Image (cartoon, rainbow, N blue to C red; front, side):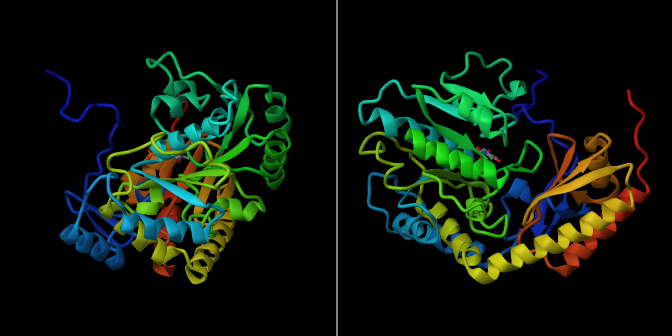
Length: 396
Ligand SMILES: *Cc1c(COP(=O)(O)O)cnc(C)c1O
């Protein structure tokens, strides 16, 4: 037998964390890493946030799970917080981002099909999107590397060019049900949509009675300096998928919708055994209490601007390595002129700095939102040292 007990779908690296302390991870052999990956935009309160830990502990002591057969005071509370803080009128809780996007896809189709328009099923999505790893969510992306071995895909997705309104418009036809788009592509390389693009999609959706569904699984939950990124575009979606940061490390996602966006989601149309269980609700409520206020959001914006300004100065010292900095708030990307992956490995292996690799030769910076000046200084010390002693590998 050569297969590992953990199904070998991840090329896991040698870092084997066993403990977290605020913005650092400590691995099996005691190495201390600065964590600017946050479990891929998940641990937005860092690794040892007292409010989150005690909320989970208390709820675990009281009641962990009952199923959705029963009333949910815990779910009503968190759903109300999300409704009060966003465009949404209603919330469906899931356990992951892919399930939140799946719910969004079903809601887009059901909006039409629950009212007799059974032919409306096509969803226009965008090049280099990432929406998750289920059959529907890989089908929603044009990235063929995720498709190999899993054919046939789910029908009904059409791929337009990201940030190109004309290409989206050209795909609208009699069967179109809506758009699904990341306001800021994460895995695709921290690529923010332009204002004109998202505003244009909103206008097209209104004009053709289509649903505008946003995937804010990565860019949502205060990451960009507003609770959700759409707020910075001057538009509101009909449907929005959120996850990653919303549980702060506890598996939780949600599909938010307006009353109109959820009109097809009636009794019996959708469900989840774990979704929204009391333990997850305690985690989500603790996260919302910490982040959904002006003071916290302003601090994210401020730290994001400082980090970005310094990054822009820094990359000027290495014009052969770095091309540009992009992103919003504390969701930042450094696009490299050379292959980014070896540099990302160099920072991890030689400077104990954890980032996330992304498409388009981009390094993803997704620090915990609770970083302070000390972590920003430490980050620049590691990055500077890493750039200074980096030897670009010769092309194979
Ligand atoms: C991570 C991610 C997902 C999938 O979330 P999972 O929790 O891994 O299922 C979907 N959309 C975007 C934009 C993501 O970044």
